[in-house]
Amino acid sequence: MGDWKEADAIVARVRRPNFADRTFTITDFGARGDAGTDCTAAIRDAITACHDAGGGRVRVPPGTYATGPVRLRSHVELHLEQGATLLFSRDPAAYLPPVLTRFQGVECYGYSPFVYAQGQRDVAITGRGVLDGQADEEHWWPWSGQAEFGWRPGIRQQEDDWPSLWRQAEDGEPVERRVYAQGHRFRPNFVEFQSCHGVLVEGVTIVRSPMWEIHPVLCTGVLIQDVTIDSPGPNNDGIDPESCRDVVIRRCDITAGDDCIAIKSGREADGRRVNTPSENIVIEDCVLRHRYGAITLGSDMTGGIRNVYVRRCRIGGPGLYFGLYIKTNSVRGGFAENIQLADITVTHLTKEFLTCDFHRGEGDSGDFPPLVRDIGISDVTVGHARRAVLARGYEHAPIRDLRLSGCHFTAVDEPDRVEHVHGLVREGVTGGHRE
Image (tube, rainbow, N blue to C red; front, side, top):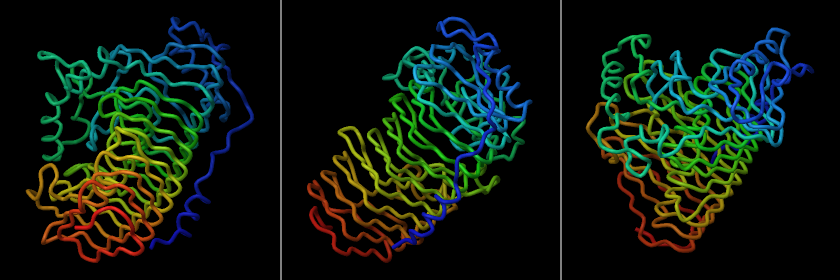
């Protein structure tokens, strides 16, 4: 099985950033916690003053503060006290001008994420307060194109814009020409860090996100801990580290509208252009409740994923599909190697504990067969699942070295489905069906 000493080494080197002992309170800059006053400028001015002084803490005291986008800067900790809420504007125009972001694994310029940092060092969001995106069936979510989230015929939605962005990426057009903001329908992510070093998100609660909740991109040294996410909207992934190195996610409680934790590394031509994997990631002591994959790799994983360690997590609920969900095919390509899970308790899954199916989506219609190997699962207890394992590689590109040891499946509805897997090992696996 995997080398858990490496997981301990990752944990040891991913530490909380240090911040200067200075405090800047947003109410001193004109913010009012009355849920109506626009505090965007006051929060910006407090962050600027803190940064210009050499860093420290920007304090958000109890109250509800209406705001547009918040831009973090180096050496600044944004601290929301218990009882403090940042209430983000529902007006898309508030999130202009466009900023560099990724939409579904492809770089472009789009609406600003609600909390955003680019190229910064030592940035943090901490405290016991709430980040409220106010997304619902009338704001942001209808752009998904899903009727259950408010879309109706005649409403412009993201699939009206996606083919154009995808084609630009495939043709290698410069990112600066890929502008999808005003008049377009790519929803912004809630919290996004672009190319930052030393990132901390700690303690806060995130609700009603337009799309993904926490999205570090091309970052190193990322620590996300003690965060609560409760946002069951469309594509509302919980935490999505993308093309990041040295990441620790611990003690988070996630109820998401899509994957709880999804590790990504870019998509198709753009993923090959950026060519940066996600690697050295530890996920520990989390509670993952809803909806698709508890731990997901992909489907935007063209740049590859390696060295992922998941331990001591509690997974499951009547609406959660998969435990470990690896999503790729010969169109997406990429690799997933050295993926280790241990000491996992699962209550109830709608589908498989482990799914890795190269035939999903576009199937075997591309020129980039994926490499998936060295998947280790040990000491897992599953109360109920449709199957323990669904693993389908290609004959010309099989899944390699899949090992289950010390696992118990109490109630499994169907036999495992295994095709083109080389090196499947089961040791001390009890309960459930066999193929």
